[in-house]
Structures are given as C-alpha cells and as structure tokens.
Image 1 (cartoon, rainbow, N blue to C red):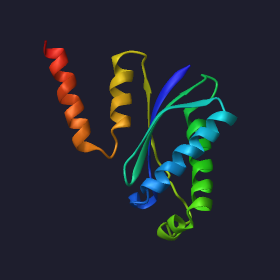
Image 2 (image 1 turned 45 degrees about the vertical axis):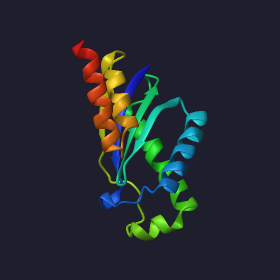
Image 3 (image 1 turned 60 degrees about the vertical axis):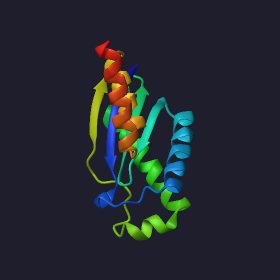
Image 4 (image 1 turned 120 degrees about the vertical axis):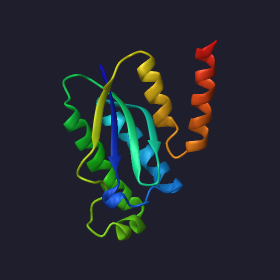
Length: 138
C-alpha cells in the first residue's frame, strides 16, 4: 500500500468550498472508497483547495486515483450544489493541475496528516505545531 498527499485547487481558485460543500465532498469520498481501492485517511479543505491523504494499492497509478476522485466529486458536487456551477462558469469544478507526493510510514506521515487535517484552521495549526515542538524540546 502507498500513501499519497494530493492537493487539488478549485477551478480559478474560486472560494467555493463552503461548509456545506465540504461536508458533501467528504460524503462523496466515502462512497468512492466503497467502490474503489482508494482509502481516504484525511481530507482537509480550505476555501479554494483540498488536501487528500489517500492510501491505495500499488497497481493504481496516482494519476488514475486523482482522475477518479476529481471526476466523481465534481459531478456529484454540481448535482448537489447547482449554485457552485454558477460560480465556475467553465463547467469544471477542479483546476487541471494538482500536486502529488508520496508519504512514508513514519513521523512524516503524522506531520502530513496533521497538516491536512488543519486546512482552513491556520490558528489551530500554529498552536499544534508549537505544542508539538515543545514536546520535542524536552
């Protein structure tokens, strides 16, 4: 099994990831996990992009994983939230590009998991880092 950290910006970096859209996105991802060998370890949203921490089998290429995630989530979000489609005049939810990196099973996984979980919560993330650093200093 491999763990990937994906970052996907909304089209035009529009601030379309409201709390309601965020909730729908996470529910859609749970359904994707049931149908594919893609397991969402964390999903962190900010107003204009999403971080996914995904574990999958080695035979599925990262390009295929994100293609599945982006196409299904976009279709379902537009279906459930037609107002979002009006904000994205091109008819696409996601930007064409994305970031992907692999994560090792160690402290790096924990650090990335914490980072993804804290998306959209800058103050909370800063406090967590400060507390974590205090632990390492002792």
